[in-house]
Image 1 (cartoon, rainbow, N blue to C red):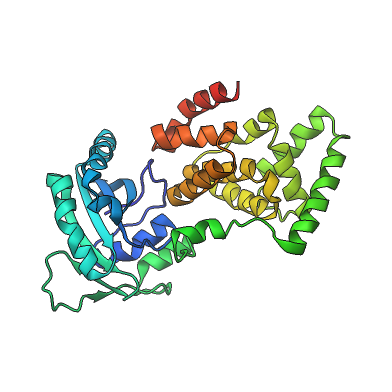
Image 2 (cartoon, rainbow, N blue to C red):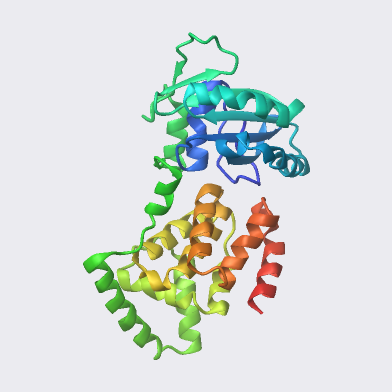
Length: 328
């Protein structure tokens, strides 16, 4: 299996064995899935779509409604088969075999059962007494090419859970929050002296050199500039799947410094950049947190539109049009 494609936007990785697939999925998601089914849709041997489904939804009476849309999206991307990995205790994972087989039908090409807590995995249908295979470790050595590939391409470290993805972007607290609130006010006051050209030049510096080692005041200035739709568009219209990752790392640093009352805009930017960079799980947790904080913000509407209508970042031209309508 090859993981490079326009939809998932991850660097090329060739997988030859089920064990390598088990090792790769947490890197592709960005976290270790739990009580989940992870479905990888392939066009021949190329990954074109990956999604995670809670097992509670797989077992639910209305589970059948989950899969037609997924398979339709997979088909439009050229997929012709699905690889499924079920993450749970072995007993619970075995329970998911029948509904997954029923709902995926001929699409289901491989089903693996993975117990992350126990460090073991099985192919579906293994004997009850089969001890399973060890989940490959994370040390980047010749015995684990997946970890070496992830390190080489800046993918990782893998979060222990989906919630940990958002926890890594937690706003400042306590004395750190007080300091950032004071710095926010001071930075905002300085903006009054900026000419329109100064504002554009400042935003372009952040867009053009996201890895330049900025100070706290710079990160807060970027967040304040991004409140202006025109300046925010300087980022929207220049980012590409190829340039998104350094931008994502920059805006993650912004989010870690911005006080909670001003968090939605930068967090939505992180979600957008995560989508462009192929980090779909990070995008979804950012979107859900934005919906909790301020569902009416135009940037949140942009993320909603993308999640509902677009899988491939190459379709960003269409998403731009939707954003312009929302921001009007």
